[in-house]
Image 1: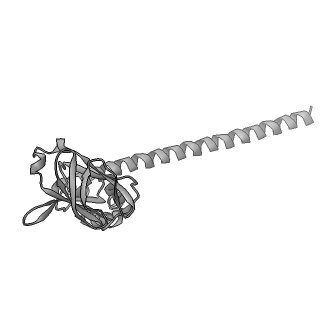
Image 2: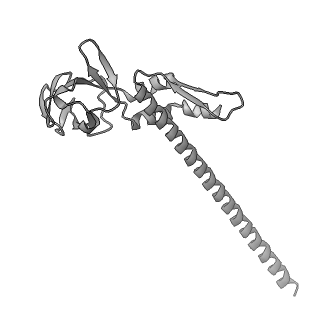
Image 3: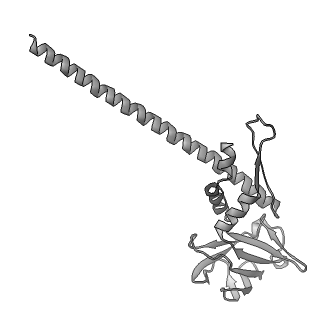
Amino acid sequence: KNEEIILKSSPLIYETVKELGFDISYYVVGNIKTTETYEKLPFKVIKIDPSAVLSGESFTINFIDHHKFKVEEGGCIKAGTYYFGDEILIKGKKIKVLTQFKNSKTAVKELSNYLVRFNSLKLVASQYRNKLSVSKPERESTVLKLAVRDVSQYKAVAFLNKLTENYIQKEIQDKNVASKNTIEFINDKLMDMKDSLSLIEMAIQDYKNQHE
């Protein structure tokens, strides 16, 4: 039961979605519908200041060639043509759009338009906490089954893998802290014993001196 509580704890899930960069979502803009995507993106957006709050902002990218792209619409971002790697301002915060064309087999000019949306990490963490299911296949089993429902299968897999990795890392750190505390406790007790023995030896010596 303790493992289930830790796996569904808000701090662990928050750290997981933060490391995965889930505060930025990517969507393929189609003729009929816009679909969230995660795997093999031909580009990525990074915030110069990772702590910058841009939740609610969004913009659409249209690829021109291997060097340039066009921002066609956005909230606080200026529409126009940019080079990949340019510093772009949104609400006074700087972002960059970097290429990852090696991830895509589609020719640049044939790539669809993409919608980029910035999310609140707290909200994303809360959503994944609600979507996460932790169960035991058998009552007495020590194995846990993790599942999460998501529009993107690849995003769900990435989340579960990173969550498991962070959970294991946390367990290792906790055990190391416990071991360190145990060693310090033993060393403190040994020092107390050493001090006590010294006092006994001094008392014996005083007794001998007084009865010689």
